[in-house]
Image 1 (cartoon, one colour):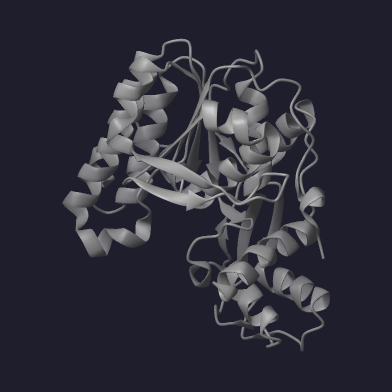
Image 2 (cartoon, one colour):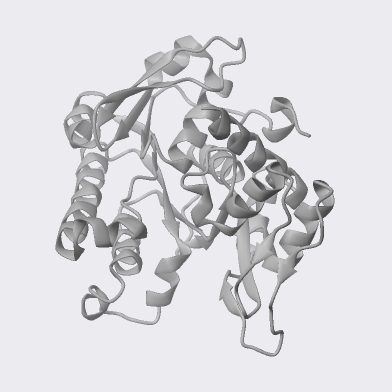
Length: 325
């Protein structure tokens, strides 16, 4: 298994001296970013420089201070972001806040559209209040389906999540010094709703010493990226003088067919053989992208992406904690 040191990359050459803002602070990427910033900055600098935002005011427990002491971290409501940015200008912003696809049915399409557009508006206003800021946006591979269209509006009600993500990419991409990363399948210890993801489902069974079951009849291919790799890339880019890419970057480091992934997990955890009914003659279900640009940028920024084995162990580490909670 992995220890804490083995899942973190080395410290960036510089983390600047200004204010660091993280939106979506209680989500998968937000928790990962705060964890890494705790590790990199230490308690005093973290408290002085980092501002965390989510849908409402709350406190969360620290997870990454190297002294091992747990401290309460204040999370402010996202509606406060523009006003705070006008008083404490942003040096670097990591934007991960978004209401995800599974909430559409619960809140209704119109409310879902309104809330997510409101989030994008708040971030745009905040960056406009801090014109020298650099920003990284964590988007989604779901936006790639809209790349072929110049007008998204006609697809909005059929695919509100993908359209709103693509819309946000375009709006924030028009702001100077903004880099867009598209996450596809994600690994990492702060996974939200793990049973909704193949990797989380497989690992829950592995931790219970049960054989993995794949119910999909067709081959399923997913492009994986580790959340920690993505946020560390974000930090290194934010404190560099690199220009943004003109197009979103697909944050895929490795591509796996799910039967292959299940076999790897079964081997690592000494499980019985995977049960599946896959018909390899059927067209595959693929959610992935060419990893070339992402891997090149990781290399240029001095980051070695985690192997799939290490991604699995890091994700399992978080799932063990969630099972104990």
